[in-house]
Length: 104
Image (cartoon, rainbow, N blue to C red; front, side):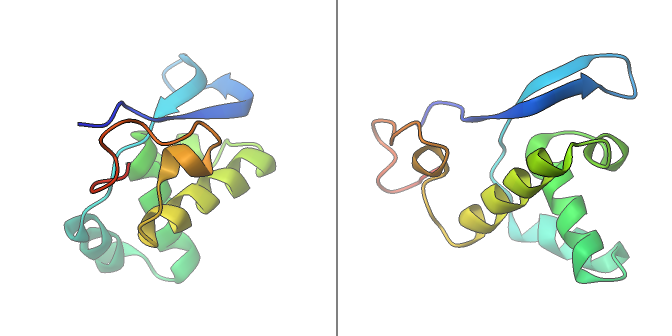
């Protein structure tokens, strides 16, 4: 199994719970996550926000506090994931052993 890949914020901030967010684990999304976002999102941007928040394990409110540079990077990670690409490689961390079949 691949090592956990994380998303490092360029501009850390305090979450709604008061925790300092610097780095967040990236979770691979499933079809059910897309279906859930489509059921409540009014447009593609809102759906993308919901999926980014789910991917990073944070609330939508915390995602909306991201600096614009971090927001852009999170969206790029989501798009790379949806294209089946290796997220570790995309983030410049190289492919972890055993990720050939199931990239993070």
